[in-house]
Image 1 (tube, rainbow over the protein chains, first blue to last red):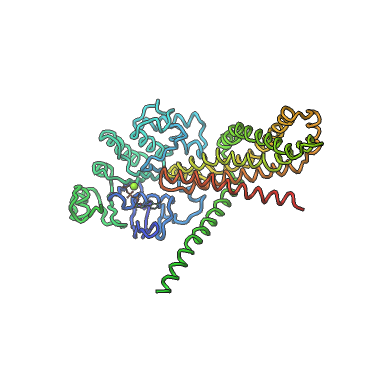
Image 2 (cartoon, each protein chain N blue to C red; image 1 turned 30 degrees about the vertical axis):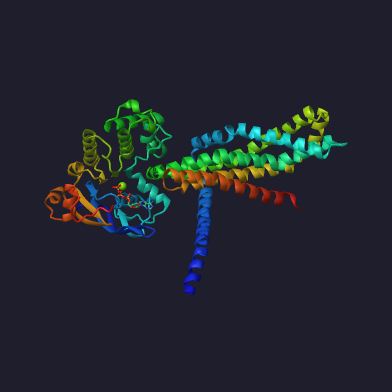
Length: 254
Length: 263
Ligand SMILES: Nc1ncnc2c1ncn2[C@@H]1O[C@H](COP(=O)(O)OP(=O)(O)OP(=O)(O)O)[C@@H](O)[C@H]1O
Ligand SMILES: [Mg+2]
């Protein structure tokens, strides 16, 4: 029996009068990698933030390991966060802390590791994302944008979480580094058995990491399937998106 | 037609009212959450320590300068009023009362509001708009405990200490003017000061300090925490933090004085 790790049912979220999510239904199996694609501003980041409990959905339910997570109390939410890692689209690194303190944040604060152990572990994770140990003592503002992205990634995977969310992990990286990161996402899923939830616009990334692809359009999941199915689909929206055409059913509002 | 106009009128009237009430409710929730988190573990002692130094130690120069000059100007002004016989003890008395009851606490409050309140709003506001606060949450760390609790505790504990230092320096400022400019007898001036020194005046100043410390840190954190929308939002938060805490300091200063000194 396949175990469903995250199950989202009829999720709605609006900001004021603006409806962003209008009934999202989505399931992710344990240990699998889901990639959500969709145009800019369709609410992909909002969807992740709802799952994380950073935004409260207006209605609908989100089950993680079969348990309802919408509206749980702070303590329960903290326990949930213990098994999740997240890479933010903008990095969201703590600029008052050094790189290694960022990466080891959860290890230091919650897992009670000593400073020395935490730093060793941080340097180890930094190496995994292709960063040399000498960046460990710099501050986020002193390193390049692509390096910041990788530090964010290192922070997300440092605690070996069961579920990892990647919000556009490869944007702003050169193609080779992007491939390293894709490799890393695949690896964390395979090696650690983590379930991953990735948002991306990068089709190379989709092909590399996705077990399942879902497309978000106008607040709903309009299509989902494997990469092979994606290539064969005659869904006009998906076709337009993966080929990157400006003409098709998706109209860009300018 | 006329009904439409009335409706429109009522709506323009009601909108700010609803917004205001909403703001009050939001602030009350924030305050109760802040207090709750101040008294429940975990505590981040290292962060608390940093705030002690930031709020207490680095505010010393501004507090010292403002209170010394405040004491000096009070001595000078009151001398013009009592420039006959007995001016010595009267000036000492006026300086003492003005500094301990009002000037030291209010100047400490306003100076720290400008120095610390704005910095807190800017720092927490930036963390909000760059999603660092969300990141804290996803790393199983309660942002209230990590960011707000240490600041509020440090504010409530450090301001009274600053007020006491301000008291001493303000009285010293009055003494300088009294002895070196107005040619009072130093021993007599000190004697008069000690004679009029009342514990309750000092306690009142300390109580004010604690309340102001709470107001400053709370307004700084609250405005930063709820800031939205990039650099502009952070700028607004900073301004609001300083303006609102300054106004609240003066209002609460009056209320506390009223409570302490009217029988
Ligand atoms: N906190 C918020 N308050 C108000 N509106 C918001 C908020 N967060 C997101 N939105 C709105 O929700 C919409 C979707 O935003 P979201 O960040 O999820 O887009 P996205 O799909 O991640 O786009 P991109 O691919 O560009 O990152 C946007 O129109 C945005 O204006
Ligand atoms: Mg996004």
